[in-house]
Image 1 (cartoon, rainbow, N blue to C red):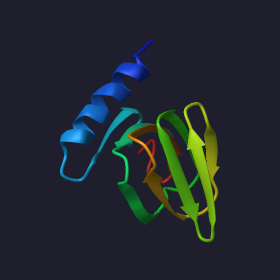
Image 2 (cartoon, rainbow, N blue to C red; image 1 turned 90 degrees about the horizontal axis):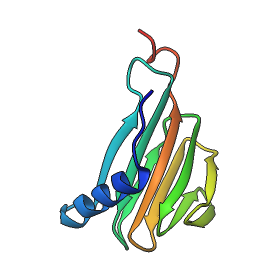
Image 3 (tube, helix red, strand yellow; image 1 turned 120 degrees about the vertical axis):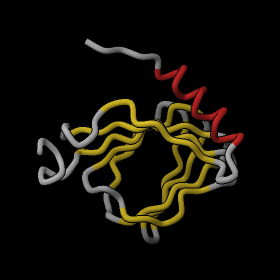
Amino acid sequence: MESLSLTAVADEQLARARQSNSGRSAHTIYGGHEHFLRQTVIAVVAGRELGEHYGPGEATLQVLQGRVTVTVGDDSWTGAVGDFVVLPAPRQSVLAVDDSVMLLSVRADSREAIQ
């Protein structure tokens, strides 16, 4: 059994994001090519965004720190610490309203996993 502190990982990634020119940092805490599930801690400093991009398919986002706004087409959702959203569409963007950390959980396509 493996365990880790999400709080410690979140703090570390936010510190890295604050030092990064891009204003963001990410670290996959579980998963990869040998698993169907991938979980990544993503930190983004206030005012920066993950511009519109294709999502990885079936995915959820949980806010660990700060506030973020997720935009899908004409719809948007703002979440704060403890909030959870199912990402419904293949294209979305994420804006950090405050310095923010999120846990992205993705179900990998079966063609990618367990190869």
